[in-house]
Image (cartoon, rainbow over all chains, first blue to last red; front, side, top):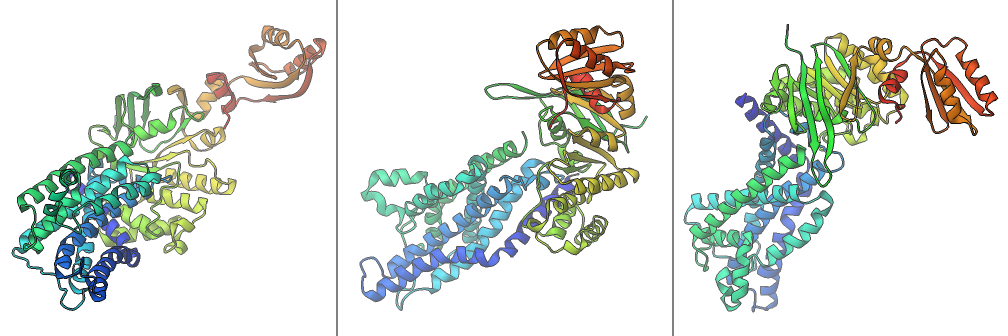
Length: 264
Length: 317
């Protein structure tokens, strides 16, 4: 019985990977554009124009962890939440998978697992881009002390993004998802300590406190900790711990909501 | 005695919310293996909710539902192995092509890649979809999509095939084709539970029919048994106009052969055991009272009259 459920889970994941493969070209474009343009403008164009007030190798170094964090996180959200709009839409396409011989929460967990696969892919694609694209002398100072910690930070980010995607997908009505993206994605990115370390916000104290509600902050800071330890960052225990706690919370919300969506 | 393939006991579903709605109000069903069983009732009678509970997608408020002796509520994952479901809407996976829809369904149920491919190919052949194997499912016509849904439900060789209103909104030719496929499956021993609000469909396909209305089973018998028990009367329907309609109804009901006379708007429905000469008697009685008869018809015992006798109303779409 249990073996059957595990095989069903594997098959659901395989289905999502097959679909991911079919959509790969479009997916890669979505993954690449934002980080590519950001590094191109801020680490190449601006330094070239001599507008050094924001450019410079210091800024590239700040940017690398933030861009990896956001790209990975939002790929996770998108892959799960956008898929669910189709699954829960008018046609209830997910019904056949809900009838697969495993507990309903297992089908929801399969969605998270597929989101993790897609966001790991996003991280692998974005990583070389943000390292390579820069003007001469503007290379970011990346230094990985501990590969295991990097992998851990990456996996927790992917899990958090996918769980968050599931939570959004089950709580929000399908046609309101684009609205949520505008309302959540944009502020979470701009106020996610992607372009500046959290510590620099001490000059705007209230904001420094408020942004602690934003999961992206912990991701950016965690990637700073494992990739660019030279830049000031939160202790890794704090950022990784907060991400893990949020991942657990969103997974619980997502799985419960998923059941409520498919079983009346 | 072997365990029935489907068994429900006092199965009940009450939807909460601001106004409580009793969708299913204590249903007992027993369907032995190999039977073609029909749930017949108007829209909103609770048929789909019964299927939903039997197929783990609706949580019963109380009562039990078992498939092959497995309690679907306590062991949903085990029960799902035994279920093949064709739902009312097209739920095909649009991200996969025709063959993949079948292959992945097989994989969900534990088939290895090669086995799933072989089973998919076999079913595509059976359901005459082989030339569409690589098509997008979005490109399928309604009839083909439905055929694929039936094929998909059969990939894992379920103990029971559920079809929820399979012929609602499809063209007559597709309907006939589906009937043929279902008869062939039944001939091979497949247990089938079908819901429908078409009397002719239930009559044509099912060995036994449960008539459902307002969440209750009103009768559960073979089509012939139902007609014998509840539809032995001939039904005379007259479309009438004039002042003395109620008087006409009372006069009709007072006739010795007449079991019941019901006035429903401009329609007078008279059920009678012995209908010899009754139509003529009624028409002349109407003329005596100055009632105009626009139309009159006499119908031998049918499921239509069974349904009318059980629910007091016609089964309309």
